[in-house]
Amino acid sequence: MRSNTVLYSLRVWLTSVFVAPVVLFLTDLCINKHPLSLGRYMNDAPYYLLYVIFGGIFSFLTWLTFLFIIKGLIASFSSSRQLKHLIAVAGALLTVGTFAFFGRRVFDVHNEFFYMMLSYAICIAGGSYFYKLEITQEHDSVSS
Image 1: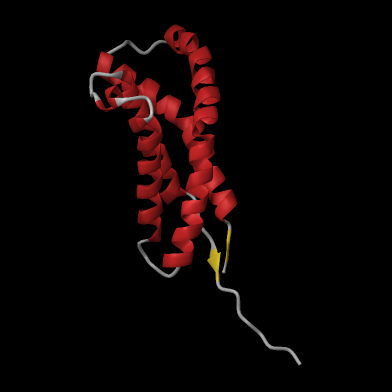
Image 2: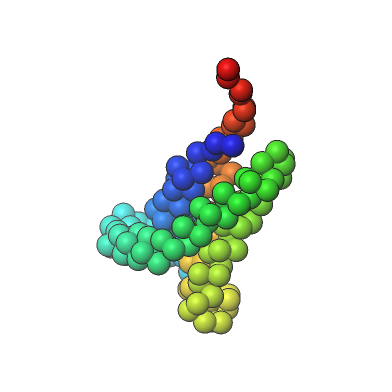
C-alpha cells in the first residue's frame, strides 16, 4: 500500500505552524476587544515570527509522532471512511499532549496557553481534513 503520508503530514504540520499564530491573534482580538488597526498589526508581526519559530521547534517531535500514527492508521483502517476523522482526532490529541508537558495551567480557560493550544489543535484537525491523503493499493502480479 502506497500513500503520500510524509507529504500529507508535513503539509498539515506546517499549516498549523504558520496559521495557528494568526488564529491566536484573531482570538485575542475578539476576546480582549482590541481595536483592529494597522499599527497594532505591524507591532504583532515580530511576535508572529517568534510563534512560528518556537511552534515549529516545539512541535517537531509531535509531527514525527503524527507521521507514524498516520502510517499506522492507514495500515489498520485504509479502507475506512472514518480515516480522516481518526487522523484529525489523533493530531488534535497529540497537540494537547504536547502542551500538557507545560503543566495543568494550559487547560485553564483564563490562561493564554489554553488559546494557543486550541489554535494549534484546530489547525491540525482542519489541515487533516483540508489536504488530500492519497492511498493506493499495490497489486501483486506474478510474471513468468
